[in-house]
Amino acid sequence: MRSHVSGNSILFRCSDGKPIPIPATFQLYFLGFCRSVRAASISAMSATRKVLIIDDDADQRQLLGELLRLENWEVTEADDGNAGLDIIRAQRPDVVLCDLLMPRGNGFLVCRKVREDLALRQTRIIVTSGRDYESDRLAAREAGADEYLVKPIEPKRLFEVITRLTVDVKPAATSVFGAQLPAGGPTRVRFWGVRGSIPTPGPATVAFGGNTTCVEVRAGGEIIILDGGTGLRMLGRQLLEEFGDQRLNLTMLLSHTHWDHIQGLPFFQPIYKSDCRLRILGFEGARNGLVHVLTSQMESPYFPVPFAELPGNVQIEELKDMEFRVGALRVRAHFANHPGICVGYRIFTEDGSVAFFPDNEPHTRVHNPSAQSAGAGTAAFDYAAAQENKFVEFLRGVDVLILDSQFDAQEYEQHIGWGHGCVDYAVAVAIKAGVKRLVLFHHDPDHDDARVDELLAHAHRLVAGSKSTLEVEAAREGRVIELARMGK
Ligand SMILES: [Zn+2]
Ligand SMILES: [Zn+2]
Image (tube, rainbow, N blue to C red; front, side):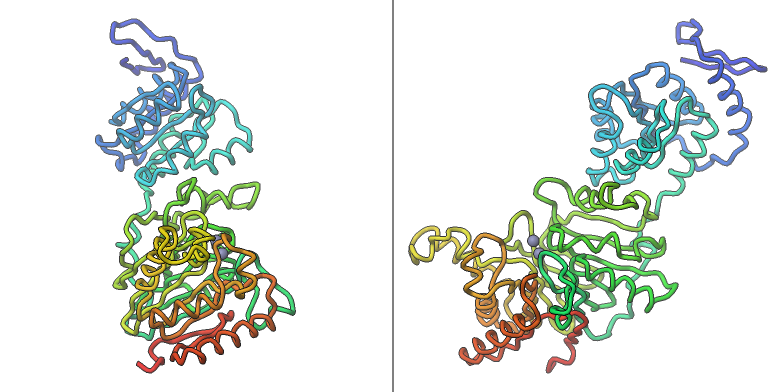
């Protein structure tokens, strides 16, 4: 198709020379565009930019395609959502113009699929629709659309949006932000949330605290946040108070995405500040990708501010390797024994190492509950014992081990297969692995302060009986452990 503009008329012709009927309203838009947009600053667009138009209306595809080709965009077209998704994955266009109501894959679905694919995170999606319902706009945003344009689309508006979206691509944060803290400071572990399963505020839990899992580790110039339970809210306040207007550069290592490990994220104030960068690292969820799982808790039925409204400063990355670096720090991951995909981490610092396994059940009981009664020598028991040995070796010589100790031994017998451990097991593993300090963690929501004190006293008795030098404490909100002061 070719177009020709002269005077006040506009003519689209097919390659065989036949004129194409164009609605008068669109012709006016198009003329307005031709006279103004060339003068506008669209220099950021280059000939290498690729756009995909997905629309079941052939006229719409043709009109938008012609407009974009005039500005040197390489245009591809698809007439339904599924075909569009295939092209997006194969060609990775810079921009996708995607109709909302289409057969074989509507626009919401296309947005969701694109946003679930981390390889497509630079792809900008503009949803186009003949309807202007606020609920559609919101749903498109939540699905991952960058913009929503109502048809007929004014060319000037289209190019304004495309220019903004393509010029405004956030630079790779790593090149902009360095480490947060001066390297060389002591390694510090601070507990912001120590409770398992659900927050438990109230007078019975004030000593140890009622917020769910969140631990901060400062080492090697980095601020690493271990899980984003409800304790994360107070950490956010503290960071903004401490660093004022400075840029923040934070890394979160997620053990898994159960509620008690992610619910603080929407209330973490730094994510609403464009100069605060949060990189969230974790492993893929069992049913959906990490991006989907984390962002869906901010969708409208659950939360008023969708993830897409954040200023583009939160980067969610699925880890593939069990060993990686955060800045200069080496980190190793190990799969925990817990429902779904759940890991623990060991962070190596110059003062020693910190291991974090907030949710973990003894292998020897879960792989086969009857394995113990069956006894050593059975295949099930030996397999579980081998897994246990790997866990112990992973923890060998750790300075601070934060480990799931939700139950006492009797309670645990009633909760085999729930994915949590008990104090007796935690102490035994820590002693076996030569751990220096064990922190009992993920306190049961039904355990009040007195009960946690009892469990800690029990742990101390176990250690005394074993003649081990292991130090044990029960995790408490606000507690700071400084590795450099631990006899090093
Ligand atoms: Zn948990
Ligand atoms: Zn869990």
